[in-house]
Image 1 (spheres, rainbow, N blue to C red):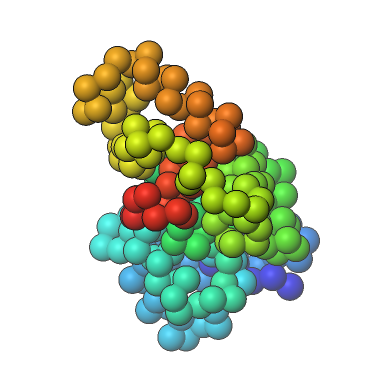
Image 2: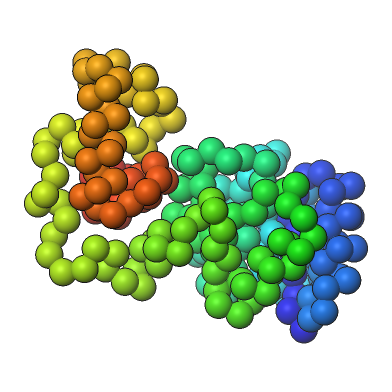
Length: 216
């Protein structure tokens, strides 16, 4: 039996998710909490769960802080982010804080079941929000780009662009900050996609974080 904890500040949602997860063969919800502090407190009287379904926006102690605490204190517990956010930066921050997958709250039951099974069996849940290559990249399980330093192929402006990629600014706003045209920003982005074999802004941001171009 795989034990699951739900950490979300919406009580009705937690109740519905608990009923759904308990209906899945091999899974049992053993803990519910409205935020990270409640989760940590509940651990005093409960065994650590194998999987935590973790919301991002919560009072007192949000998902970012909670994920960081779990990563530091419960290394065997795997985090599956449960959120309504599809924001690239939010995904990046949660993955860097130890999340093994990212699931939208309005996903269908079969997707929840698949996510839990994948987290249990392989350690990761890979969907359109988080590619397989990026997950391995974050967890240091491969070199991502093979031998040689990928940084050597970057121009100074491409490196600066990568720093701005990790901000919450739009491409248009990045163009204004760099004092270049939006078309030039598009060119930098497309060139980096090709050079680094990356397909998304999330991927570029993780590359920048991984190689010390920027830190979160």
